[in-house]
Image (tube, rainbow, N blue to C red; front, side, top):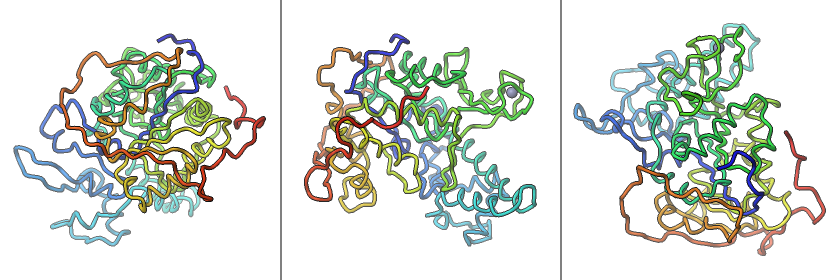
Length: 428
Ligand SMILES: [Zn+2]
């Protein structure tokens, strides 16, 4: 794939990956029994209980292990206290941790540290808990995802063209290592993240991976005297290969080992600072939006506090022409009264919507929806060279196709009349 912008196409596909994409992933390669035992990725709602779950190994059967009390005992004690759990560590009950949402915990500490003056013991205590939580998350998720790609996602990505893009809201690196199966996609990702001054125009017509909530393998140097201080660095080896976490924290600028992953905590306090790399990635997502004819949401539930994401996708109503088709892969979308179904209907009024219960179903029955309507400028990515799963599945169609209802019963119209701009001016 050329590094020059490809011919503009308005028939591009955007994949959007949420937590469910990681939970439903078919991870490869699994190299040890302990990796197998810890293969399950956590949901946001039952984050700790899911993380504490371990599958069977040669040494033990399925069980729950409170890794938080081992790795971050102070943080464990704080959560036990604030959420009113049984204080006895002996005989702790995993079910007590059901419903302790990672977002609620982050929000609790963020609110706490905003209530007290900087430098006070209370403020420092809340900040320390936030840091401990970030550190716990990064170390436990890294074990579960580094170096692994998702077989289902790989098949889905085989159907994409070179100019199709991917947004991931997940901190884990499953999307990164799946993208890396295609050399051109990896090169674009490395170029995007390595740009000293990110110019949106340079990436507008190219297929990019945008990790809009940060990533475990985006490292920030903490040494204030380092030239790289405060800058996000994608952990790569020899400028071209994704690096696993071992050694990734060592800063190439100053040699400090105290780098920290850049992740956006899921709390209602989160803000994206103007002018930062993350801000520009969001603007790039917005700038690409008019070029997508299909938006595919895999395991993404539009959490109510994801204000930025709702802002981004509501911009489709500023775009002239046909509304994009929406493809939702999520077990909850199959239930018409679920909160997820209601959210999608509310955000994507008037859009044609296709529904799939799981990534496997979408992989088996939905990929034809991603076929292009004969645009000559498109360049297919094709199948990756190796590691294709040979698993054959019996196809069972769970897909349904229906237009999302608009408030007055008919299909909704774009909100802008012709002649109006397609949203913010180009940013570079
Ligand atoms: Zn440094």
